[in-house]
Image (cartoon, rainbow, N blue to C red; front, side, top):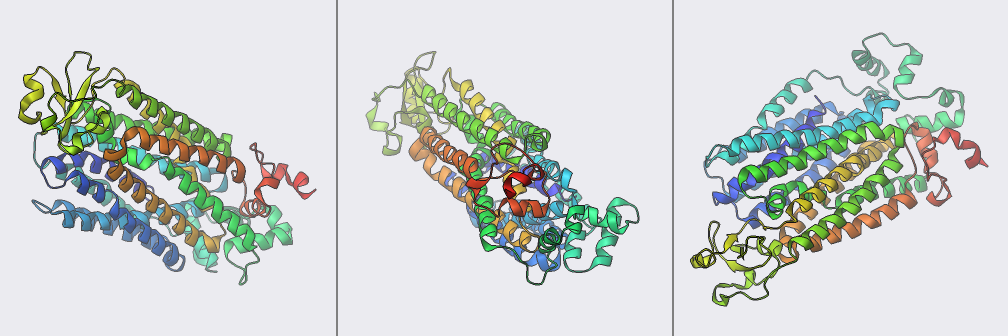
Length: 542
């Protein structure tokens, strides 16, 4: 029930990408308005994350999960109930939907961290993240099926199909237990034990109850470690936690969030249809097919993360993901250059080349409003950009002269090379950069700070998604794919340096051990390989 939130998030993003075609073709939205629709409302997720991070420490996790689902339904109904919704109505609906995403994201991560045993926590949070590409993939199937019906309301059916998983989640959320760790942190030990027993289906002894609370035996036997554990559980009135240690945790947690979004993944997912068109795939079935391949590859990548995260550890898997993402971005840049390698510098009809169509690269041309690329030979190796409508060039000059005109995609022998490069990019990103930042932001902080800093991390995540999406939508027609993905590659390379220098391995460590990892400055820690803290204590103490 709880993890359905990520499924709905992925499904919603997928259907919104598919609905973009219908919304723009029906003139309900311009391309600029669509860019704003997928970016500006995301700032509501920032607000949702911040409010939830502050309030759920007082009121618990379950109630906010229910609230998020109700808010999503209201926003969805606003978007699809009107026959011809205005841009304002769609913005209000998407704002409520994104508000629900911020609430659900924080509540889900904190709830799972508090209920899942330590040795399964990494896999559980990755499995939760895995439901997002599952939702993306099923949304791609839905988009493909709906697109086969030539209906002006196809966008409405795509978006409205989200009500099915949302209704299912709303029913199931009333059946889940409350977080027993949260109850325990509030000194409600009796209720905490009752909620834990709903999960484990047996009467827990004191030792068993301490075990499900992740209180290790050595913490009970050592006064120093037990004090740290109590700080993490929120039992000490004045927690004895060093501010420098918390500062290092905050820098790492927020830094990893920034690194993940700086690679531009959110823009690729939101603009998957446009990316497919630029890749040279014509026709709605082909476009949605490539879009669905992107979603499915995302699912495979997160699945690999599920298998590898406890074997390699967080740090090493994240580095592998970053390096692969960086190399894939370089391949994308090369592929786009190959697509644009041949073109004519001058148009034979300068009188119909408007200023916005005065570009030479095909990928830049098809990104412009009311422009298309005209080619004359069967290999489509030379052409130029001229004005036109969706189906034909201005005054049919390109077609009359025997040319092939397209306003949506570029003809090139390198098109499928670009598709493969994009799929490799999605695969490597989703293997580490997709799930690990959220896992780290939730597992490294003490109990009494977990809600607040998880909320801050999630809010930063959604802020960056909005900035990347809005920037991509506005800069794509101006700079083109080549420059944008080159920028993403440069930022990803800087992220590799950050992780290599500053991130210790947290996998397999209890809360007090994670605290000890961040007690010292990063460069003094021998964390270049995945070695559990228990095996290093002798060398670090010395």
